[in-house]
Length: 219
Image (cartoon, rainbow, N blue to C red; front, side):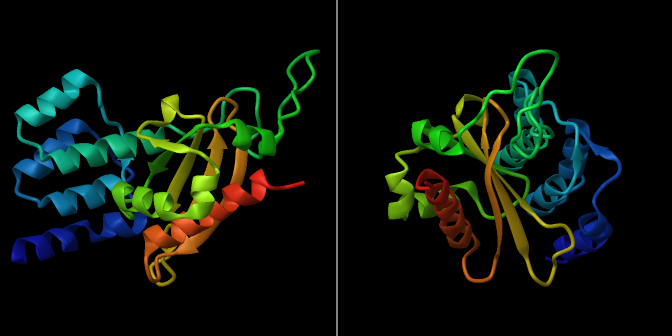
């Protein structure tokens, strides 16, 4: 317990203001080897400027040097979260198509995108809530079931994906934001925010489901 407390005190400035130094596989291995707990390492990963290698070869090497599985999972989640830094080429972040040359922009109908979608993925840049808890809460909701969406693990093969992150420095209000994207175009279909008061997973599931419903049923 004493080691964990000391570790948190050391990492506190990092957790408050983020890391300017890139966090690599080697740094994660070093933190594990000096005895930092998995929870502390995962907290550092969640707020880091990560430059991870999550190729099969790199994951095998991490396992070989005894990095815990939950730390490796946190590295993969952070890598996925940081990979969505910009929408697809040809589209503005607001969801409006951009014209390039003489071609005319395609008129994207958000309602049509959601009603035709069949799969959705969750991408988190924060440690909480757990993916399993959020998936469970979503699948309990009748409005989410009505959307006829199957939750899959990776956004690269999903029709839609939800990007979830914590608002920096919202230590008192515990605010979390989300955006729902059409993966193929990068269009933002809906966005919102909630807090962790009560159950964060339940709050996010409720807001995400309502956002999907509002777009799907819009006239």
